[in-house]
Image (tube, rainbow, N blue to C red; front, side, top):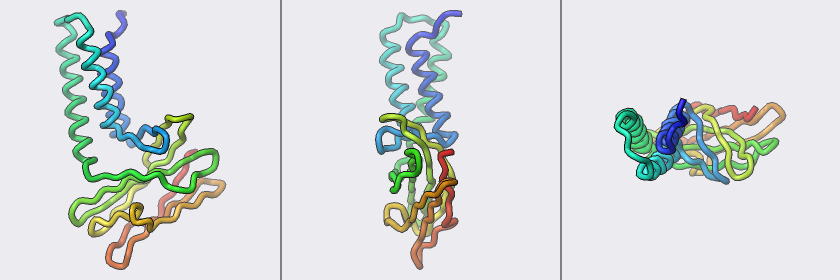
Length: 178
């Protein structure tokens, strides 16, 4: 079986990055979260550059074009949902280097967020989505600092609080890297 050409491999990696994003996985680089659509777009861009270096072959071009197009559309759709999102590294760190991150969104009178937990091995790691919350009137509790993160032996808990006029539900979220 012939080895896949560099552009084919990059397009497959870009598609895999998008699927990981849709499954609730995020890439961690240092103290920042990189959304799946962004890593997918970067890999797709690299695929396009690598494609220019390849000799042309008509047999594989159709499926590469189809996979690349689907990945590009996925990047655009996922990126469109991320326009109003902010990402936050939550303190303190958990046992063994476990970290909690939050993604918050707010559009008009609706807000919400998700908590992610994961490990970074050196400068890069992976985080996975835990639970989510809804906030009234576009309130962003993490950005406002109205949360408490505590860690114990069996994991941690994140309490996301609203204000009198901007409730957040549910308030309690388990966080665990195990």
